[in-house]
Structure formats: C-alpha cells, structure tokens
Length: 124
Image 1 (tube, rainbow, N blue to C red):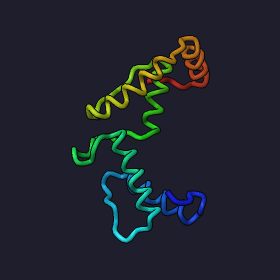
Image 2 (tube, rainbow, N blue to C red):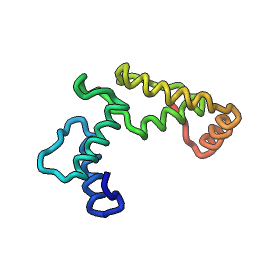
Image 3 (spheres, helix red, strand yellow):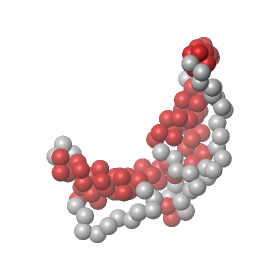
C-alpha cells in the first residue's frame, strides 16, 4: 500500500474500495494502483460478510452498519429477523448478534426502552 495520506492516492483508493464493495461492478482496466488496491480491499470486505460473488449475489447485502445493528439488537435483548439473508450471511450475523447478547444488560435495556417510550418511539 502506498501513502494513504496522499490526497490523490486516497481519492483513488476510496473510489476503488467503493467499487469493490458493489457486487455488480467488476475491476476496470487502466485504473491506478490505488484504485486497484482499494477495489481488492472492498471486494474482500464484501465477500467476508456476504460470501463469494461466484456463489451468487444475495437478496440482502450485509454491511458493517447492518452488523452493528445486529450487535445492538443483541445488546438490547431484542429478537432479530433474518429473512432474506443466505446461510453464509446468517453465520456472520449470528456471531455479531451473539457478541451483543454476551454484553446484554437487562438494566440498560429497560432504561433505554423507557427513554424511547418517553419520547414516543416504539420498537417493533
């Protein structure tokens, strides 16, 4: 990896990373080294959470944000809905959810629910 602090390199890297995170895009020819490296990193992150693209693109895409939501659900003791995710994704989600369950504190959960209720926010 070259100098990520170089603004030009960083822009190309982030553009490549974004492209690699999109399972419908393929690596384009004649791109900079930074773009190619970013694309490879983005694709590796995508496949780490969703499985190999060669095995098909799932109905729902798992991202870091989705995993954080499942972690939070586990921490709050909430049920989760895994409809639309494939078995590979469910394995990844289960690890994050279980990590949240291990940190579950019923006192915090009830406190948060009461705050949400006071503000008119209902959880489904």
